[in-house]
Amino acid sequence: MKKKVSAVLVLVLSVMLVIAGCGTGNNNGGNSANSNSNVAKDTDKQQNETEATSGASQASYTPIDQLKDKYDVIIIGAGGAGMTAALEAKANGMNPVIFEKMPVAGGNTLKASSGMNASQTKFQKEQGIDDSNDSFYDETLKGGKGTNDTEMLRFFVDNSADAIDWLDSIGITLNNLTITGGMSEKRTHRPEDGSAVGQFLVNGLLKNVQEQGIPLFVNAKVTKINETDGKVNGVTIIFNETDEKNITSDAVVVTTGGFGSNMELITEVRPDLEGYVTTNQEGSTGDGIKMIEALGGTTVDMDQIQIHPTVQQEKSYLIGEAVRGEGAILISKEGKRFTNELNTRDKVTAAINALPEKSATLVFDSGVRSRVKAIEQYDKMGFVISADTIEALAEKLEVPADNLKATMDTWNSSVSKKEDAEFGRTTGMDNDLSGAPYYAIKIAPGIHYTMGGVKINTNTEVLNKNGEPITGLFAAGEVTGGLHGQNRIGGNSVAEIIIFGRQAGIKSAEFIKVAK
Ligand code: ADP
Image 1 (spheres, rainbow, N blue to C red):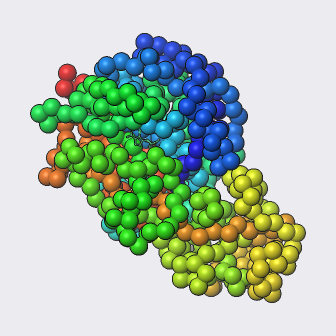
Image 2 (image 1 turned 180 degrees about the vertical axis):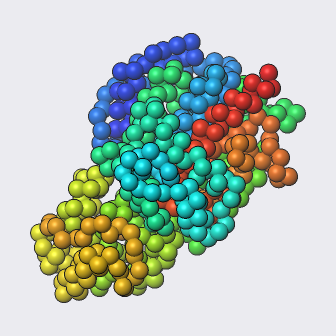
Image 3 (image 1 turned 90 degrees about the horizontal axis):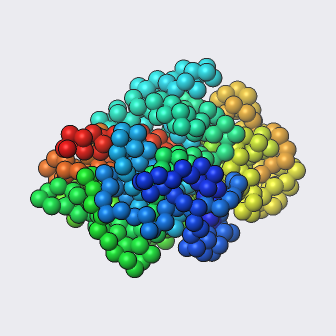
């Protein structure tokens, strides 16, 4: 789903810009305009890998000299779930702090591309899409092979529309709808211009965090969650890899993301995945899982690791599902389709791996390109092959031109009949692929998302092995397991971090009020 530092760099710049423009400063230690040399260093290093492209400016996080010894709520990790939890904790009267180990905020959330799934939303209604929470529930459960935690899933779908409204209320409007694999309705909400959701979301959340004066410290790695007599009461952090400090709090919210960059852990739970590239940012190492296990927390589905079918291999860069959602097809080196491109990710991955070449090519036209803004970024990164005719594209791809021509003709006639006799595709067929120029991106599967993680309940309380909450400990987002079962639907992780991130902020605040 997410991360890389170049993106981070630009993001940082834009974020900081936002921050610099909006900072209010307050007695919680709100951001100041000081620059952060570590950020600049890191971002420079990885600039050529960046996917973020929006405006840039001077940005900064909270300076270390504003660190206090105590906060109401400590939030570990400044991805989408963490920033969302912080905003809700603050709105519910708390004084939260966010610690982020990387030089910038955003985590894997920054790399999210497709959008945020939600049902029965105002934007769907405005656009005449008659969706239901029940069908969102049923299709997600089917996609997860019936193994999803059904209580979590019910809470998730029933709170999805409200999460879209909440984002809209804080200036993050996701009103452009598309579809992802395994879904029957357009319920994937994107920014108005169709651009990738991750950077837009992270920028918007950071702006709000700044406006609310919530302190956000970067280069601040949490190494331990502390407790006394079974009650969580703070964390140990290391700043800039040197200075260690204990900070106390009444509650801790763990939003450290998944472990998709921890190849040691991945190959321990899934030896068959050795050698796969990963789309994950380098900070996704499963720290939260390890810290929670040390407190007696338990995990679920740790071996359920999602392989995304369309990853550009040289840069380990995810090519979002919206490309297929808006009409692209996949072809083999024979120039032929070989699967329903909008089947669930596990099935499309299996189909690619069944080809002798274990890789494939996305083919699309100028219409798809105009509808999916992320393609501009893919082009800037050198991934997009283009040609004025199908024959010329076939030549560049070194696939048989006759085959590719026949594939395109058959596909375009399937689109006009709304029936894919070959592979039974039923979605992403609003437009055919007849608008020159034509484009292609070579892909193969890559490690994308860790569906397993720590076990929580719908109050986001972290559970121990007996299913009892660990007092004062909450978690949300990719660090948790259960919601997605054995296969995550595209667009559901962004929904998860907002829905459960909000819940973690609200429930940790409630817990503190009751405890006091
Ligand atoms: P989610 O999608 O669940 O919000 P993300 O991957 O977007 O997850 O964000 C998780 C964030 O947590 C990342 O920015 C990551 O660098 C950060 N993080 C991970 N481990 C730690 C840690 N030990 N201390 C502080 N931050 C951490």
